[in-house]
Length: 260
Image 1 (cartoon, rainbow, N blue to C red):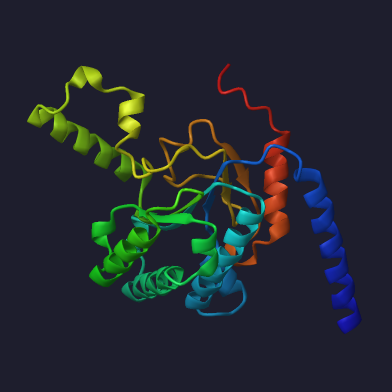
Image 2: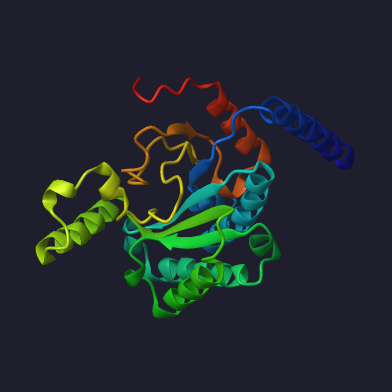
């Protein structure tokens, strides 16, 4: 049994090395966005409590950050908890948000975040989150606000339609106050009011969704107009470095014309 496992590990490492050789010299996505899907289904199929799925998924994010930094990806946006997810049981919502609080707190002392100068921002309707979580978010964002080498966005209480509505409301308020003329509004102005306005490149080059589902579920609806989409039949807690490399290879093989 042990010999079989070691053999499989050797095959995995060889395949990972082969994939790296294929992608290392190609054009890397500057901004990767990922829909972290499949935590509950992975737990269910493993006869585990859903909380274990969310815990393993949160731990996988730490690995992902390392992999993306090794690839020199500048920006990562992760879809962790949508506005619709509030419809789940109070117990599950509470467990997920408690986990988010714990993992965000760890960022404050994460050496690699500070060494690599990763600016961390939570995007979404933050006011819907518990007060304690809001305070942790404020502290993390303040601690990393001066960084601009890399960007890590975590979408919590996020909805793509909600983002567009919130941006529209802010613009409408400025027009109403006389601070802006409606004739000034164009796509460039509108983007200044999105949750991702702090980023040098708001639009993801590549959007990955795990778990085999093939839809965006409201993720970055404005920003995704020309994103390459990659749907992977693997639950998020089982996501591996080879899955990321395969997605990057898929991105590199596509012809990006942007409507031209």
